[in-house]
Length: 111
Picture 1 (cartoon, helix red, strand yellow):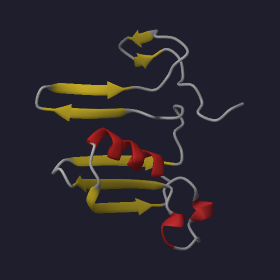
Picture 2 (cartoon, one colour):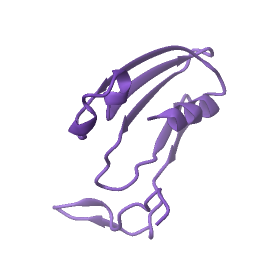
Picture 3 (cartoon, rainbow, N blue to C red):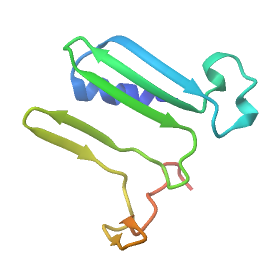
Picture 4 (tube, rainbow, N blue to C red):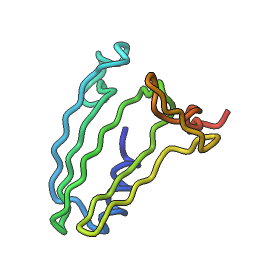
């Protein structure tokens, strides 16, 4: 769970990890809690230090009720780069009750 996130971090940092600190837990899928080791985790946070001195923070969960979440942000001294989930439209709703996309993100899995 997060192998692609780690690969993306390596690509964005243009460097290889030299240290990793990770924490996981079972929060949403009680049926996996009896599995061995990290297989029992459905939620995790990972901090990665890269050889070039940069850090990445990755959070993952097997459940995202708001759709498949695939965002990334890179902060630098001259600015920031962000990617967002793909949505059926660019429409957003901004009201006193909700601020966000009018549509759910596209599902990652083919239907």
